[in-house]
Image 1 (cartoon, one colour):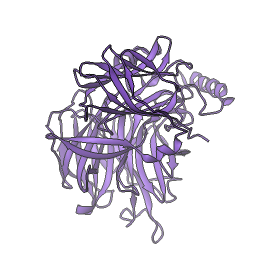
Image 2 (cartoon, one colour):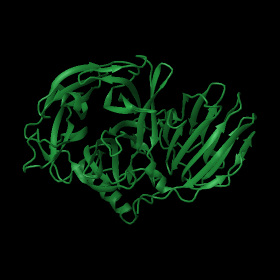
Image 3 (cartoon, helix red, strand yellow):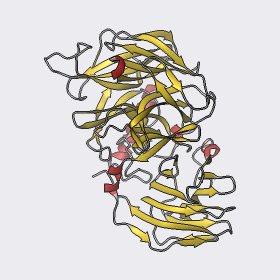
Image 4 (cartoon, helix red, strand yellow):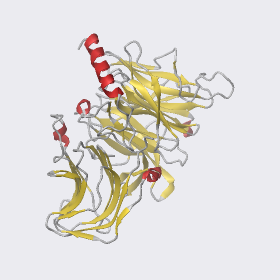
Length: 495
């Protein structure tokens, strides 16, 4: 499409939506962050600074599809209610602003601060053109409202076409900044160190291990607490591959990461179809890192039937780890502040034994639900949401295989040829005291499932008919029991 036709198409699109209020569209999430309009993907530069959580993200300011990558920007005081701000870093001279991170420079090591005591925010990002990816700096002296580029860019250039997504943090034991940056085609994460953010020294490489089926990108290295041992911590390294994400757990000494899980065991922070490029707020008021991922899938990301926006952010998750046998398992729990969005609870006072089907007395497409499933030892049982006619989304547990699964094959899917290939996802999960504890969030077109207090998570997109709001429990002829059933309609964060 030439520039004239593209401009006409954009003007027609803008006019068609100018009469509609934002955040009331059919599939628009009501308690997940999405930009007012246009495309978004990877979260970038998550930082808590001067009482605000900053969320930067990959963004096309001009259209509702991937392109012209710049950094969008939103802020929040609680990670629940968000205010969208103007674009922070724009594509310049056909060099796109790919993913990266933001740190503060309280000792003015960069020299960007111009007054005594002035603390700069520094963005470390990948500059991308058709031939080269390099690491660059930008800085802000007004809490992220405006940004200037460093005149000495790039600060790290290996003359490579694929070399991206710097994840930078201050490492207190060695008193220097550390960068984890992806070598995508080599399926490695490289670590660099710096005292100034301007000059970088190579330290080590990690990989390739476990899932090497796709390029490695969007690393996040963060120290998290151990469940039940708050004074002890482990390091978690997350890496994304094409349409999924994996993690490693171990130690980091300031130069090298040591994986303590089985080297080729694939561990997923999320087993759903639509969770990618997760990065974390490493310094938070409660000192427990909080992660956010992008809700979409590169297999069909440009085709999902949402307008005038495309893409959203997953719910913020508190991170920790626990030992399960000889493996470290990532534990993710939705932030507690989300509970303030709950409307009056509806509760089933008695346990519900189900042999085939039980229709619940409440319904909706914007809710949180929590319950315990006591599955029969040979059953396949669970719940269906977005029920209407022969359409529904399934969250099930196969007790024989000890697998939790999701299945969206009975929801509308005609918008994309690739979408059906990701319909069913499953993962191994054992009962605890003969129970599976499930916490389910349904937000118009996003489903997040947290099992056994965050030991296993699924995130996926669905696009149901508007009237498909029913909720059912099911079993396959074996009697399974549903206990402690709570249902909360959720309020919108968009006032």
